[in-house]
View 1 (cartoon, rainbow, N blue to C red):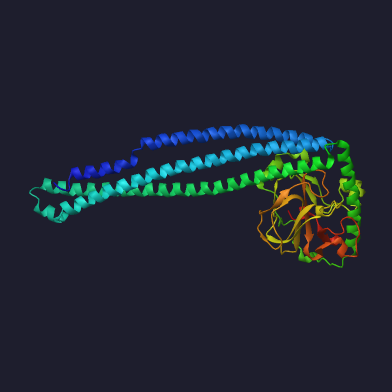
View 2: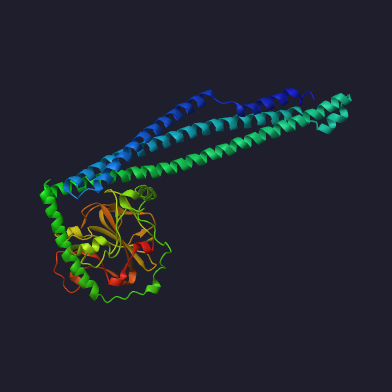
Length: 446
């Protein structure tokens, strides 16, 4: 047992202890990174409290009479809120980068440990191969005494046990290393999503500022001019709605109800992010519903009491309130049937910037009053993909999404002039046109 004995065994055991010895430099660096992550978290908490205050102020403004000052103030507050959200996102990005750095340090430490232990085990095995040419049975037979034979046997057993422990611990370190690398991959994925959020939030600020600038230019910052603009929009909308109703009544399109998805099956998703919808739930007292709905489908109190706007025919979609620049999501996979901007036709106060998707299950969905359009005709779209940004283009006295659901069979994209020679302000505006039975209640499919 002189060559196989305890010196070699102790060497192997000490090699195993490398696995349990923390590297001071790595530990100090990790502690410093964690301190920075904690500081970022505190900053985010303060910013989120600030965002909540802005939201309360926005809610209070929303309850006031629609004036130029309240609209401008709402846009200004939205910009401040977005600026705070941008800082929160930037803080999250910084923390994600720090987490990746921290995990990379741990990975480097584990790789060093694995290399050291692999080397130690390799040296020990080479020592056995070089120093012990005779098998254990030969050593036992040639032993001078029972004690010497027992020592050889015991040494071999201890050696095998130590080797097994080292290999087992080495495997555990490798498993931890793989876990750390998975965490890095997941953090990098979240980092990409955060960077996308940051880009979206910056676009939202730009959209809000553009809307504010356009409104101030239209009104010359005068309340009287603003109210005059609202009256002009209402008059133009009345003319448009009457012409559209006349057209809809003459469309020779048949809708087969049996080809539509069954009501109540929830085939559509809400056209907003999960965080937006969660925020709506928290603001039930403001909207009196869980979904930020400001106008329901059909003969609602507002539509029937404002025949100058809806001609008593009921609201053909559902309005959902939100800040200018909010990302609008596709409610179902589909193809972009068409996009348009009725504001390009002077005096036409209708959908403004709009997108219509066709879904292949008998339904089309419309997203109107957008500030930006992010898709093109013929493009394939997935559920949750951004199709545009919420705005207040077209007939809109405040920022909201007009979300419409249509029966595909009863819907066409055309100008009103193409059918029976309309001569209203919207005659040359391209938009979705549907027969009466093609308008569907969005809540039936959400």
